[in-house]
Image (cartoon, rainbow, N blue to C red; front, top):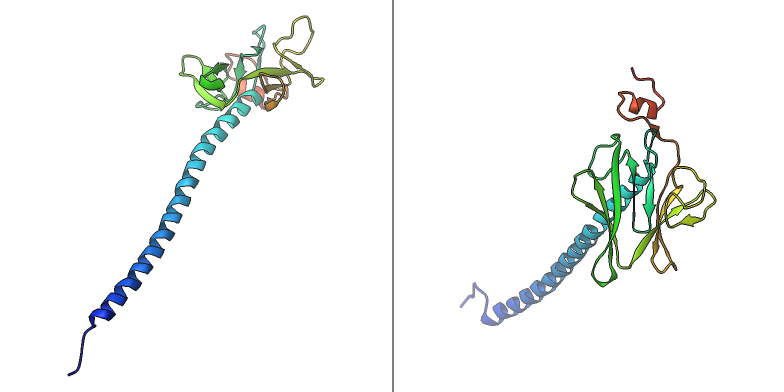
Length: 200
């Protein structure tokens, strides 16, 4: 008699082989899913921090000096205030006063908050250690307050430095102010003067 189907043994062997293939493929799919998940987590943590730190560099790198303001930049170890053309979550080119403040959190962590006007504070950076600000002089030395007491200096520091509060480690230099941006408030030609263009 001629047989047209699979025997029970052939069917069992086929099922065992299929089980091995499914097991191997599911392991590979699981590993791919793990790699994708880890990559998304790393990117999710890195990108906001990168944006925050670069926004802070833009903030300090675009400081301006207003002619009718006696102290366009004031700061101490826990924060500073000044005027900038580039504030986080704001259009570039509008001169705004801002404040930067260090806030200590649990377990020695520190957050750096930026506030402009009545806006909600923006977290521009965070560190797993106590940190403080220092202000860079032209000669490369740093001061813990600005303007330095009893010292004749330019109205702006050359840069803002973040250092561990223990003083042992330089954490980051935010930006260096190049000292060329001077604008006059409340005139239509502010941006023109900034870029050296005569605007009527």
